Length: 356
Image 1: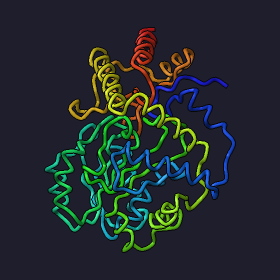
Image 2: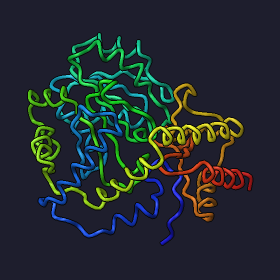
Image 3: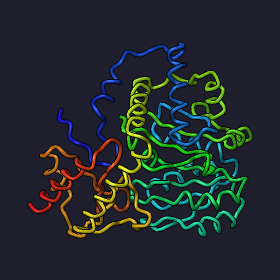
């Protein structure tokens, strides 16, 4: 099998030393060794997410599972879904498919909702939760959580549910300071691990809300997770290889320094945005452009099939658009443990292929 370099917005390349951790023998998940590992990982994730007041969920799942968990646990009656891309729409679909009422704050793809729009929408009806995507993987838009936080603090009864699947660990998200009730993400993006593990911080407010929400299900019941977490256990068999990998990633993050990691993502984003403006144009409003991926308008009418094949011959995997803009844009990921110098080589190859 060929294993091309992944310049797609997840999964992304995994460091060899992290992959080596995945081959370690399993341990009993009802054994002290596993309890100690869970305690170590939970403590580290609270620190990395600035979520010391929150419970941490380590779920053997894709991020979509935790999106559903957020809805099933934190929406009693009606949720406002902020929709500005394909994955924000998924949050809205999950809301409805779980039998919850919802309202939609529709924002053009490539844009972010303004704080005023959010406040007006929340004021317009009796919502008890709001869902949004922090870093929309389909568009490359980073929504301004720090600006929204001021709005959300006016609505104490509303649970704030945030999908940061392609944002967390590439962007700084201070969960406690912001007041986010559920922040969720998958490790196959900026965390730099293979897929299969999803992580969420869950506030005390969200836990209390779950107590009055019926039909939370079983696998993703936050109260069930807390019952076991209080004993450093998981309610179901954990994905141990990825737990080992996560422990290694935490070690790598600590060695680099968390702020340095955020800065490296910013440097890579600036590099790709500069290249894009020279050769194409940005799809996302630049003031809300993501530091983990860039979505690029295909202003040169590239044949994506040809570009993808030519890059694959050079051992790179190329990403087209997603959802309704699939054939109009392409995307470049710059997240995880990627280095700016590696990114420059990819851009050189991409430019070369485009000119063939």
